[in-house]
Each structure stands twice: as C-alpha cells, then as structure tokens.
Length: 100
Image 1: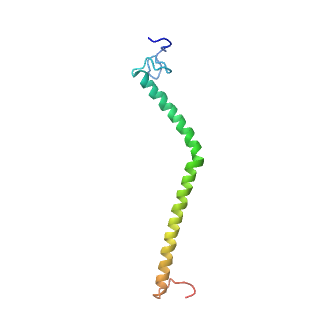
Image 2: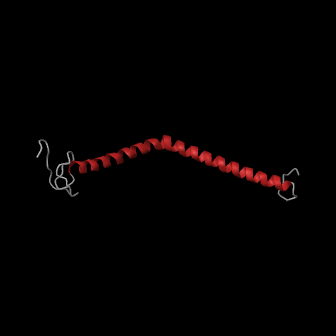
Image 3: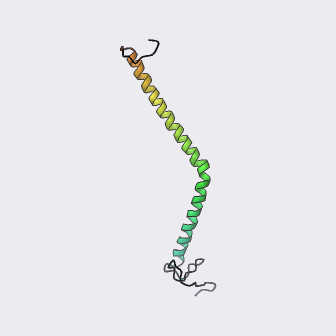
C-alpha cells in the first residue's frame, strides 16, 4: 500500500472501501475513479457553461436563426402572393390590385 493512501469502509455506492481522492480500493483502480470524478466535474462545468452561454451565444444564435427563417419565409410568401396577384391581374381573375 502506498504512503498516504487511505482505505474507507464499504459505502452504499458499492465502492468497497474506495478512497475517492486517490481511487485506491476500486475495482478499476485510479483510472476508474478518475473517470467518475471527471464525469461529475464535466457535468457541473457543462451546466455552468450552459447557463452562461444561454444568455449570450445560444440566445444570439437563436435570434439570428429565427430572424433568418422569418425573413426567408416572409420574402417567399410575399413574392409568391405578389406573383400570383400580378399574374392574375392580367387574366381577369378576381384577385387583382384594387386600382385595376
């Protein structure tokens, strides 16, 4: 056993006396417990980062995409309706400009 390595009693989590700091006593050894610690840290960091970027990057991106889609749809519909009305103005169709 290495100096400074401690063993804890078996926990409810089934780590069988693992030391959460060094990973000693785990079935996978230090790598296994490092992955557990890393996973927890990553989750916490991701949550914090997500909250931070939600007001900056994500909102900005969402606004940009929304504006782009809205502009595209509006332009498409406007062009389609205008073309339809203009085309039927010259064919006697009831859908025509008010001044015709």
